Structures are given as structure tokens and as C-alpha cells.
Length: 431
Image (cartoon, rainbow, N blue to C red; front, side, top):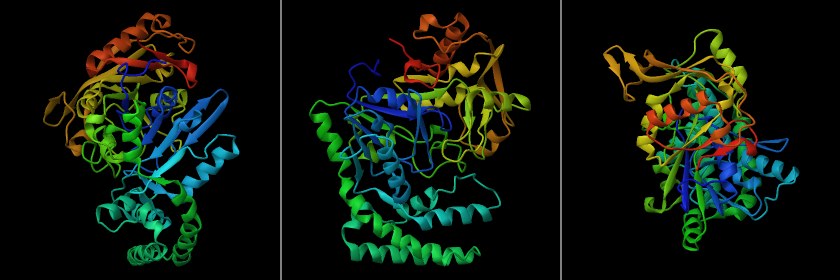
């Protein structure tokens, strides 16, 4: 498989829309040529679906490189680790015959997402007037504790007395806040201490210095892939705030999130769907109206891997993709789910937005204005034939190649991979 930027030893794979772009599939294929795969941010609210033959794996925290034997898989300090869900995923892989022992490491600097964070997340969202549409997995409250300098890190597990003290303080804060919200979950909160203590020795055994591991691997001449969760438009700083996640999803966060210097990164591969989707609330300027949204959702199987929620669908947003290319410093692009468009006679691409103040062709910071934006659409002819058997660009119909050429032209990033199905064999490398 062609690896982005030729001989690059450290590659970042980043989503360029609102998440769910198919990063797990791309990471899975690229992992074959890597020695280390590390996740740099997010938590169990993201799901990567990977197909290996007839088997389907849905991974939430462990990098999809785990499905390739011998690859070291790391969770960096930028991750908020849900201990309970993590070991459920770990044990499920073992039960399915995946060799996991000795291959997974978790940063000692990573913050823990504890059961009371999940309870708080659901309670706050339930009471909110203007709902964000969170997954309820506790991501926001865990990052709030981290930023507030009151979080609990994997390193704190090493001192049982200190860990119990920190847990006690966290539980007390949660009780007070939940009481203000009218929730009484005292027993559930108390149970969380026992759950954490039970898993403590297992997690300590996996703890490591991810930055040191990555740095030493690169010094040995090994290849490293850094993967993010969600997408650029959900970045805390650069996304459609406040309808964003609670971490930085963009490529620059990869260095911070695993603990290496930015000069270690040699290439950045952005992943986009051939159309656009979004889960939860917030603006989606190219969103389909009426039956078209349901039609494409059905064609693409657009339901969240973590929550099962239906994804909102729309035409490819070149304004967002070009913005993502800039803020991530993309050196290449991977286009997924091209095959979902196979039956459509015409395909739209947004090249700008009509907003209250006039037309714009750069992605705006004003979420409120973007919420009412109307896409300026360019219409291209569809190809109306099956692409799933294509194994090279020459196998694709002419109109599909023209569509990809236009995507490349509008985003300003060269296309390096194209996916025409869920199988590993259905990813076309572009030389």
C-alpha cells in the first residue's frame, strides 16, 4: 500500500469534516507499513469501524493498528481514558483472537474519564436549553477537570492513597453539581470508586511514556502513525464552536497529544468523505432537504458507530475541506465512500456560502451566521455505475475521476487514496 509522502516516518491522519470520515479504515490500511500507531486526543465518544475480511471491528479507544500483528498501539496523554470501556474493548479483542498482550500502552500523563464524568455529562445535557448533542460519554466533564487542574491522571494510580483522595474530591464535586441539577445518583457514584480500584493494577501495568516511546521509535528509523478522533470542524478552537468536541482534533494537536516535538511530523493525511455528514446539533450548510437526506443515509449506512444515531448528510463542502487543508497543513488527502454516490445522476459540491452579510468563500468563525448559510453549489454529472470493483484510478468511470479532480482542485491538497467500499482491498492507492 502506498504510504503518504513516500518515505515519511511520522504521519498524522486527521479528519477534515465533522468526524465519521472513515479514518479507522485508512489507519487500518496504513498501519500495515507502520511500527507504532498512537491515538493523540479524544475519548470513547468516537468509534472507528474496520472490516477485516467478513469480520467487523468497532474500536473506540484502542488504535485500529491493533488488527495488524506486531504493531505497538499507544494512547497518548491527550486522550481522556474511560477505564471501564477501555478494558471492555481490550477483553473483547482478546476474546475474538486478536493478539493484544504487550502491544498496548497508555500514557502515564493521560487523564482518566471516570463514571461520574458520564453521569455529569448526561445530567448537564438533559438540563441544557441549547443542547450541543453530546454522546453522553463524559468527554466534556473529563476535559473540564483537566483544564481546571483537578483531573486524575494514570500516573496518580501508582499511589493508592493519593488516588483515593483525588477520587473522593472528584466525587464530592460531582455530588454537589448533580444536586444542583436535581439528580440523586449517590449509589452509582459510590460504585465508581470500587470499579476504578478494581481496574487500577491492570491499567498501571500498561502505563508508559508515549512521547519517549515514539521518539525512540523514530530514532531507530521506525515508522509512526498518529491518529486523531472526530474531525476538524469539531476542533475546540477551529470548529463550529460551541457545537464542537472538548479537545483539539487538528493535526497540530498530534505532537502535544503524544508528547513529541512538531518537527517530528513529516506528513499529514486528511480524510474526507465524498459527501458530508454530521452527528448532533450545529450547522451543516450543505445538508440535504427532504427524502434526499434519508436516501444518502441509507446508501452510506450513516449511523454512529458509538451511539447508533443517524447522521445528517449533505453534499461535499469544499469550503470546509479547503479550510481543513490549511489549518492542518495537509500534504495529502484520502477520499472515502466514493461508491455511495454511484447511483446519483448529479452530484453537488459547495464552493461558497450565501450568508446574511453576503457571499463568503472561506470558512467563517461565526457559527450563528453559518447556521443560516445557504450553499453555493456547483453541479457535476454522476457516473451511475458500480465502482466497488475498481482497484486503480483507471478502473473508475470518467465522471468519477472528474469529480475527484474537482475535489482535489478545490481543496488544494493532492489525493493519495480513494475508498470505494468497506474492505481493505477496496482502497485505491494514488501513485
